Image 1 (tube, one colour):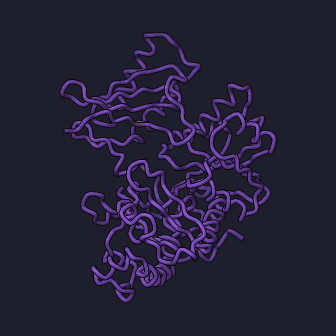
Image 2 (image 1 turned 180 degrees about the vertical axis):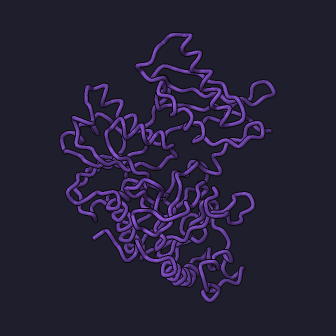
Image 3 (image 1 turned 120 degrees about the vertical axis):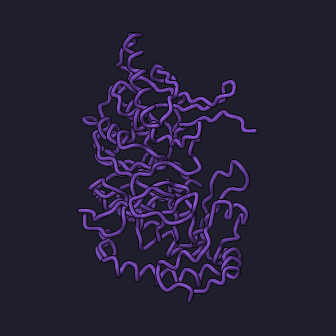
Length: 432
């Protein structure tokens, strides 16, 4: 049922025709909101303005700041009695972002997630355990409803309580997990500390990882530790949540469902489109959302469109592994640095564990970077060996970053561990 061949293998011309039709309908619908009604009038935008997908560039961008400024319901395109759920960000600084959903929106979202899960081989015979938080966070409910639509037996374990997660995995015969990458390595480490070999003592075979940037080396480490295939997934609450894009079994990029989203990759400075294959900021337009459509939403996530066709036969474009966020970039001594660059280097050393912390602070009149990384628990404490390892790591980071950070090797378990998204960067600088 969820191998939707007609949609997933649609030829490019037919797909662009479908997108143009849905984009025209979107403009007619979105102008009913207080926000877009005003924006479209100011820019002389009508449904007739859209003759092809290229005409998306006539429309202005929407940003997180627009959602906050129009908090809570200024972007709603239907009356609240048509809405059945809302999700929101934490709103730790200023207003949170709020996304409204109609029942139609929720049904389509569940279908998206079910389509993704089916693509990586999950079936109604599987047992699916969700380690994401439920509530305002979309990762829990998004996967829950998608898995139920697919027909799997679901275990809504929610976040945290690692030993309980492991008990459920063993007792219920869990075959599939949804889990963030940093927590996946933590889960594996606790298993081994308890004398449990996940490759022999569990039925795990598939995990879906996302919510935080991670390197290919990190994925491989997770697969090796747990004895699974780990598939990268992408979602964000503004675009529903999980299920926006997902790897297939080829593991060569994330298929983004173009019947749901119109994709642009722009230069985050000039705001102009970049060529296919070049890294830029992902901009998305929802093509079939009812309660609260978003037009040209700047996600701040950095990726690129992968050229060529996928051997799986799906024709929807593929996005490369996310490189981080344009607003997470560290600028140090005039050099642009993303945490994922540092992780990629660190994961290349078998002597290191998976936990690391990047601290940037001002010392005297200079900004300095310190990279603390945990050693593998089985590695030596020989000072001379550790000194050579530190130099090797520093040399490779210098080659990658074009500057030399300080390296501090610490014992396993020394750095803070979180069961939510990992905190990888502490910027302690004060800017005048």
